[in-house]
Image (cartoon, rainbow, N blue to C red; front, top):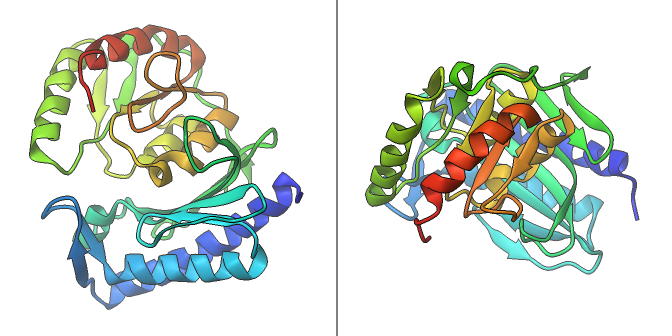
Length: 271
């Protein structure tokens, strides 16, 4: 079994290479290749090219590992490890030229299921501003090599909270109604458009907390580890780990204040 540091080195290398591809293709001009769950859920040629690069590089370095990517799906391995990849998290931002998108690469132990896996290492790279977030299990979280720690605990009414919305219009309407219940109880809310960066912003103290429902495994695999290794509490619906049902991340003291409100808001919403 490789060390977490060795796995992180692979994750970082492929994420940086894919980030450079994404940055260059954005400069060349973005081409929409397809839509997925709805007309606003787009895939660009750069998404596919970046994921192909990542998948090929990981296959060369770790041929017995599994793979789960947003664009190319899954592939089982025999090592017990799986790479969970979002080649461009924040594709709509990418399409519009908003500089909040990232390449997210994580490696997990166990089945590629957020409810059961253990994340060993992860990297999130924003190729626009050059910020590189990394973490390994037990090894801490870093931004461009500098150790990250979440902000000191704050009262709920002073918390800056990040969230996101789904691609389906009816889902967004439900999420907006929940936001209306929350927004008067906190300092303010931000919607950045890339879950991996939201979680990294919690780790870096740029957000006090983050929550969202409906994320895919590749949306949060690396970011959740980075937030956790920076000292955040990261949880899901009820006592379950973070998953599509819910993810909440915050400094532990704030988490204790915010999580009950989020849990109550989502309690009756069946996916």
